[in-house]
Length: 431
Image 1 (tube, rainbow, N blue to C red):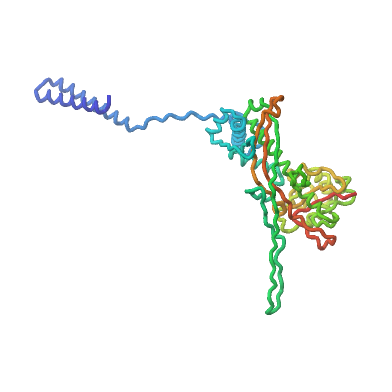
Image 2: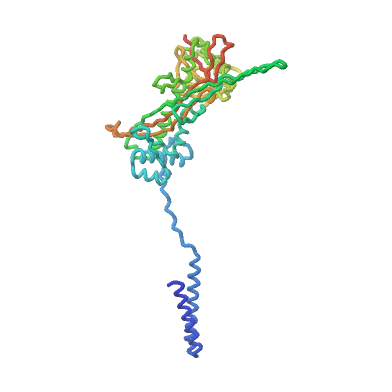
């Protein structure tokens, strides 16, 4: 019964009670009608009070968060455990849904804002990695890749980018009284970046694809990031300009290719005689000469070499030192040792042993001496045909980037006329 109906009933009861009293009726009946009207008033008041209380809101059922139920121990994604597991889970679901066509995974991606875009540059179709993990993959690539981490990155909007570089400065003069000042100009050269496609293949069993999304996503992310970063480092330091390295000429081959004898190349230090046969033949004076050659404007220098080259061709000399060299010895051990106060980055795909005229190490400021172009991020494609017999999936990750080492100094037989750049190379002797 509504409040309006109860109110009508109350008014009728009150009217009946009045009629009984006016006509001199039974007082007991009048009291009964009065009590009934009072009871109806109380019911109406209670209903009105309940009407001001907001209706209870049904609580939403807690969302399923499967990435919190466990997690891999070697998850490469950054962040807390839950954040890293969520990114790995999202990446795995995206691959399953957008790339493999799994309806359940695609629905999860849609409900959680994981969008994918088809790359229409080739007939097979590609898939741009979703934004939620794209930045993390870049982070992983930077973490694994030394060259990209310390270089200045130039975003590329086309396949070719020309970066201006001031190659000659203005000239200062002392003009005489009432004498015209000689004009001079800054000369600019162009550092050209040409985008190259880099690709990696990885094989994933269908069992892994079906068993655990977190492991699946984490494994793929680590494999893609490590493979691409390792290839970038190899090309940046050792690329010989052939198709093996995407036609990229790396730092060491570019300096080595300068015309003239090696001792005439301003940005090169040649090891002591005998260093071609043993790393132990290198001397501290060789490493010191590299520091002496480095230009002062290279304000963020680092050493780049294989771990074996440092510990067998330099740290052994520090250990042999006496007196107050204990700090040098301490600095020679750790995740990031230093030499002459300059941090060392180990690049494990650089040469690990000597040979006649083998380039062994680089000292330089990559942010000053090289240009690193970024044309396109990581895209992923998949095929179930390549490894059909093995019942496995083949994933292909590609990116497009460019690299140019340009500040490599000059060549001059006269030492006083040599002008090194911000990149210095150590080469083993020819004998």
